[in-house]
Image (cartoon, rainbow, N blue to C red):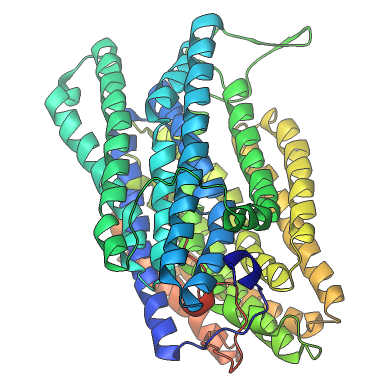
Length: 573
């Protein structure tokens, strides 16, 4: 039986020991937490050496390009379709055929990415040579040209990591972003010392910062090579050889591409949204020339965003993504197997029960994270970012954007589990349609807002409105689709969470005015997090909220991830 014909998302898979699933999830969670912490350190040292000027903004935009492809191809459409097919091939017992399919898939991915890289480099050369760009936008093009080959490396790392995940090797794939962050930090710290940035004058400092940014871009490629290399011994141990397959257009590969199309469309819509926001920010940000005006269809106006807007928005996004990556995605990953097992049953009691409990637990954590980040945003930003070139004015702008992003954490978190519920029911159309609606709403809201006093924070406000709307609509559609998931009962639990949020806010307000309140940012963070978090948790317990996510391993599993029973983790970019 061929791989193409053996794949069926509803095929019962062998149950996995509960301890194994929990231990894997714990390992991934710990490594993800380490990666997120190192990511914060990386951005802290970058803000200290580059500030929010044209160089840091240009690098932030250029670095998004390979990561967009990583999310779309490496750990997105192709990987999501490949993993179940490869898992089923291994289960059939023909390991050689399974590895031939894996090698052909890797060869296909490499061919696609090599072609995209060559075309991209040509386009970037044409843009730099023939189009008159502002200096900061020309820097974006140049940095992108240096880092574009990283597309092949980062997507290859994610795809090869998927092979290891099927063999239950989770540590090395999760370590890849840790390695990248360590190299980033080392290059910035050591490079700044070698160039003696601290002793340079303003004009000379800009030149040296540009040099350091080019070093960092080149070391991104070196990090990419190392990320692939650390996976090779583990791949060899599981029987996979990284070889080039000339005739990779096999029936199995064709089946993988057919399965990847719906996921690619959904992922593509999300990445289009990210691209639109980035381009809008670039277009509407004033350069260092204070007299520059925006010319738009015969109208002349001031640029609505101050220099450094892209870098500041990137740092604000990083702050809200920290709790999202550590808690929400991990929780949605843990519950996905049970949702997949029960979604297509005639009696959906188990599915609705697991989904309802997952939503409640998600909201308990997400609402605490939303309010918590809002309460400690200034201390966090000053501790992590306000050093060297990063000024107090930059802190004000990042804090304003963080207000809106943090207020949307509950919506981002809720979408993680709702998307998986739709996918468990084999419905990829509804999330796709709602993602398109989100793009339209986001763009329609944020463009007028950036011309108000909100400035760049208007982009964050648009994100809040559009994602909150999408989360609510998805919840209502899902409730109607399955004949009710107990929304009225859930609203009572949400009311209890709001009471707990009030307790958290009141506790933090009191601590800030209490005698002996620390003067240092780190001291204030510790006091507010322990005091506010303790108050929230205590009230939740008193009101009877069940915040424990019990691992559910039904007797009959029906996931699309074969024997691993876990979808691949989402590494930190």
